[in-house]
Image 1: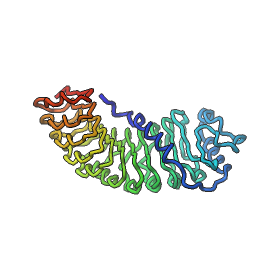
Image 2 (image 1 turned 90 degrees about the vertical axis):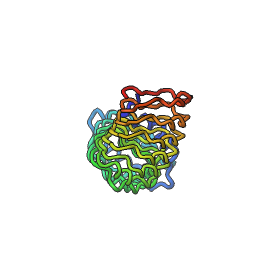
Image 3 (image 1 turned 45 degrees about the horizontal axis):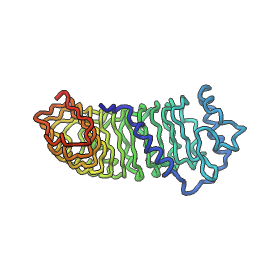
Image 4 (image 1 turned 60 degrees about the vertical axis):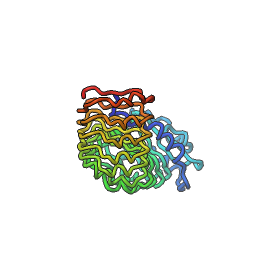
Length: 332
């Protein structure tokens, strides 16, 4: 069985590397004195707990002239700070004291599993070059920061595994370059149809809304998200039937709908998803028989249908699916 909770950052590793190294190259550098950037960073460090400051020992006034050698920083050819990159470092503070206005050339902010908490400062919305914002696996709280909608350069946004609540704001629809959105493992809520309507015009390839409190059904408009390769809606409170329009999502590689309250039959149109590698419909209330169209998924390796109310016979052609590695049907 695939664990739907902490999967978000396992998936993000490759995608994040790609975005940071390829798509985060600045088109032009805003003139800013190195001392301005250094003072902003040192000012933030001074507000952190003693133990956290010790983790940033390379950040000090005596080496401010060479701040590009400081821990966790990347710079451009003009030696201006373009990236804050920290993973699994117990900084254990907040971002409130970090003056992002003094770091105008940032293209990547990455704080993964850094024990950070509090809210996200609104000054981050002034970072017009930012393409990657990954704040996953921390303890950030509050609502979805609506001001992130001002950062139209964003391509990669992960707020996964935090303590965010509330609904997805309308401002997300302005992120017209966003290809990766990961909100896994929070307390986001609201009607799924409303969320899909807001993001429907975005060029998303990966959408992760798993392990939240979304309600309602999957809207038929989901079929318009034809660029999606990964769709994760597992572990919410979704209900209703799986729409036939899901068969229009021809780029899908992974489809996870497990641990919801879906009912009705498995749509025949599932068989149109020729690129599918993983399909998890387990732990729902699906009924009827397994459609023979499933055998059209010749690249499928993982098929999870357990803990439903399915009946009938297993289509004989399923035995000819040579790529199928795991097929689970328990508790039907």
